[in-house]
Amino acid sequence: MIDELFTLPSTIERLRQGPLTKHLDAYAAAIAQQGYARHTIQTQVVVIADFSRWLQQKHIELQELDGKVVDRFLQQQRQKGIRRGHAGILSRFLARLGQTGAVEQRQKPPVMNPRQNVTHQFRRYLLQERELSKATLQNYVPFIDQFLSERFRNKTLNLPMLRAADVTGVVQRHAHRFSPGRAKLLVTAFRSFFRYLRHRGEISLDLAACVPTVPNWSRSTLPKFSHQERYSVC
Image (cartoon, rainbow, N blue to C red; front, side, top):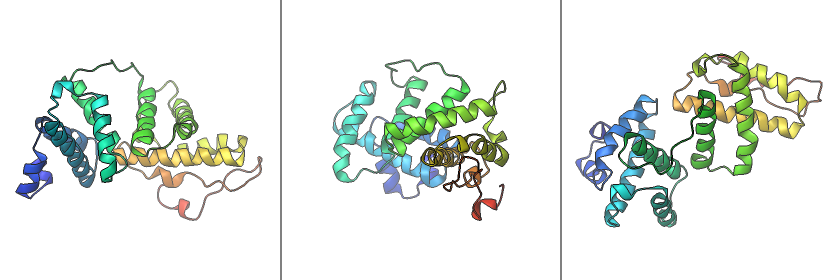
């Protein structure tokens, strides 16, 4: 898989160093199946390869790898211009190593139903890749959890089934009950969630564009669509 993503022999040689080398191809193939774009996969591979070389330099064995080791690496890399999202990449990679038994999982993950798993993954994405504050997460995630609970009540969670009517419907049912400020938080949360789902390949429609704008309407007035939001699936 790595040989398909990169062409220069010198680059491939640099990527294949350290104790994580033998796991890179399987990881790249796994996230490719999840719908990640080629350039995104390349970025993740480079970050993991940098971490692998660092482990080699520090003489840290694979069985010693845990979250604390990752934190040490990230702290040392910040002065070199570490980019947003690297923490999330390494966290997902470490989780995969635990799932495959390559490293010991220090804690068993909690058992979650499909809806809880989606909101948990979205929360982790906001925290680790978007690097949003925990206060922002506390505002965003409950909106998403409520939406999924309403849409798939007593039904199997099926994200590809989501349509524009689901998006406009939930905003129209709930936004008018909130202050303008909180209503704007609601639509921002939904736009972020649907962009995330599309980036992950969970949905194919651009539902983020279907989320109504929120002017400073009165409590009796429903939100209106912008000119751009009338396009496509909306």
